[in-house]
Image (cartoon, rainbow, N blue to C red; front, side, top):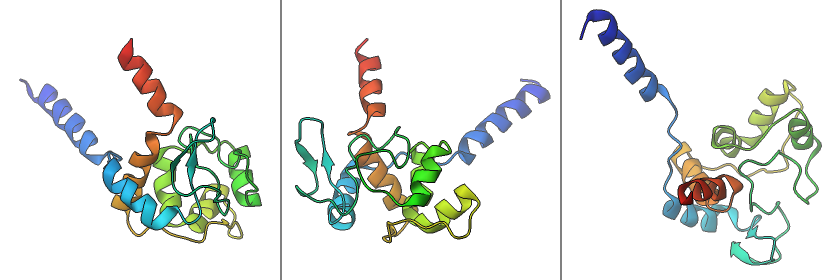
Length: 154
């Protein structure tokens, strides 16, 4: 391996280690969802089956299919800032959800460039690992997971 090839390989390896890790633990995420999220949120599929959380919880939106969805568009009365962020193109991905879960108001203020933006979600997830775990748990109820499963089956 020459110097140039070696440097390229080293740069590629470093770039991989610099990528954020969103591979959370779905089991830990289920536990975190139960202890931190289900008081306000549930996961209910199109057939009306409660897949996670409690039935008839409407403090926060249903999180079924949240990953891959435009922010502020589910059948729920969202705050104006979240609707505005969605209209501006915010799609919920792991990369977007982690900072939102850690500090919803700061996330919306930065996203919208508006220091008065506010989230109706006052709860904050305690740490990045827990946020990643919750996202890993919610991924199993999203179109992203369904698309990956369909691709594996082909």
